[in-house]
Image (cartoon, rainbow, N blue to C red):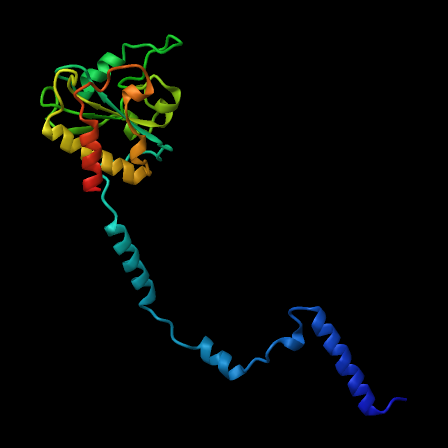
Length: 224
């Protein structure tokens, strides 16, 4: 029989080998101190902590710019904003809705109605500078405004009432359009490069030769 001290040495060597083979071996874990554990478990909770978290959340939410045209349905994956003019001296959401409702698609089906998501009035049919979302925006429905499947599906169509081949938009219209574009681009992460006139999508004069696109984009930069 081996002497006692030899048995102890053998047992120690075996334990060392086992511990080296496992990352979380029991012999590597620190022994618990019951007194310390009790003190942690019995420590009083900070009752004000949840309120501080809620306050911080409210501060973050209040710092976000308000969006006046929140849709009633979950947002689509908007990628573009397409700018149009009505090419008429007057107009409104209702008048365009009636006119577009008489149009037919390539399959011979009637349009659902107005093809735009927003209309901005010029004082004749709507207030000058009035921004009116249509049923397509409220319900987050694809547009019928660009002649392009991609830009109808992922492009927010904005129609500004007026014929901008003859004259530019009014100052109130430009102010309203600037506000709307800034809000939409912020909320849906649409870069300036994707705020485009209808004429970029297809061969058309829309939104007119006197539509001040460069001035509009400069306003957005300065006010964003």
